[in-house]
Amino acid sequence: MGMSGTGNGDSFLRVNAVRTVSAIAKYRGDGSTTSLGEALREVTGPGGELQKSAEKRWKKTGEGEGGMIGIECAVVKGPDGEVRGAKAYVLAEYNCGGMFRATVNEDGKAVARVWKEGQYGGLEGYENEGKEYDPRDLKGEKA
Image (tube, rainbow, N blue to C red; front, side, top):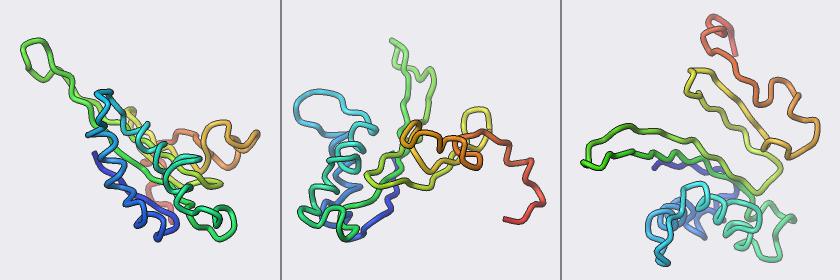
């Protein structure tokens, strides 16, 4: 598992965001299994620990606003204990208007996003939001 956060630094420090997400995903005490995505939502999603830490300052000072990107790896083992495969998932969660992020999918295509699918009606068509493209097509272009 790997993570990165962005937003109001005081809030991330106050809730010890990355460690808290890791602990929820790995050590939840009720015997249930919690995915990294669920743990990210509990800390950085709407109504999560970051937002709660802002208390009365929420939506007034930028306090508590932010998001995180996490990478979760899953290893599949057969009945004999041998590794049969592995898969990695890139997850993102945030509690603010949007969060810039990009990934390369299984097909080697890059996908850049600012918003969640359907977060704002009509913005999905905004300048390649969520569209796949081949990074090699940009070779030689200046950013």
